[in-house]
Length: 279
Length: 279
Image (cartoon, rainbow over all chains, first blue to last red; front, top):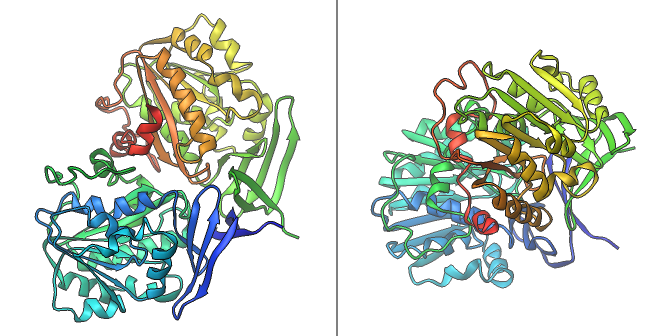
């Protein structure tokens, strides 16, 4: 008997992955969490039916959401991750010795537990002494905190369902702007420009972010297990240009499977149809 | 009753697209040709069960296989397309007024007929007076022709099945080198680095091409309907650097949906794991 994970990527378009074994299937107070074992991708974390990460290619997403902004922030000391309960973004952040404090704010503690148990190499940075894990609502956290940050990473689920929705509002971006230091950068999971279902979110998100941040663009990476494989990250700042030079030495000693300085610069080169989508 | 096109992308990994209507289904002497109508991608040309092009995103592949090399060849007069019977590469080539002659060599005349009938906007360049269509074996053509070219485009199917196989041999690349002018460029469909099935072809192809051409690299584009969406093109030459500047004015008056000068330069920035694959 064959077992398949079937994910609707667009109307009448499915990615189907054969499941060798279901390792975990659990309804948390916020969402349905599954961990499945597959041949091609290794283990996959599925939340509310959508692939969040796979062992095969999580390095692409996590390297690109962290090292692109970290390459150009002059003097980063404090980073905030909203969502990202799998720990992958934190793992990449703590490789930067210059960071003194990393706050992870994840609403669903059961995502963290699942990651620690089934993806120990992804969750490996969560024990770093500079990291504080806050199990609480990221929207409330950014609205109420007295702290400020040099880097804010919004590593959220899609806005379609579940607790991710409030992370795509102008109010939330304004609260992020309030706690973002000068010289700091906000990056976020920004969907895909290709399928209309995702592209309409890109258009809306980008419009809201542009009203809040003086500098606002997107960059991209090849992430085959997300719909279309053409994935965007938002890049927003009060004053840091995305086309600026990398800080010398920032990546020294940090080995990567996807990211390098040429890839960083190239990731901001947008195809014409993506530029039009953002206008 | 639902009808689906199911394409195996990797072991236990399928892309399934709902078919509204089968417009054509035909066994030519070389391969099975299907044209299907879908909601999300418009019409799709399927050959031996693999998606060759879709109305939604054929512009990405065809712009990138043509305008990337055309941007840097100093004085291109003559172009050769091997395969590419849909006419998409020719359509982009004939937008360049500087070209005086375009030879298309397609082994399967029925691909050309299907494209003219079902994808008239893709096949639209085939009637240009500078274009000669040769219905013959591209392998024999390059071995026997007395002509030489400034640009050779190998727009082939995969090497897995059918007539495309011989377009992936060192002998074929040597024949191409013989008919490639100084200052000229060869580009080819170069598979994907992501799934092992494609990556092993990339490794083998690139090894053979490196033995023939002094300059040899790959560039990439986001093509969501090909496996993984991360697609490579080979770039080979006797003497033209891929990192060279574009010829001023070369793209004047040519409107594109994907290609632009920043995208061209960025397409050569390879992720670390792709670099390792090519070594």
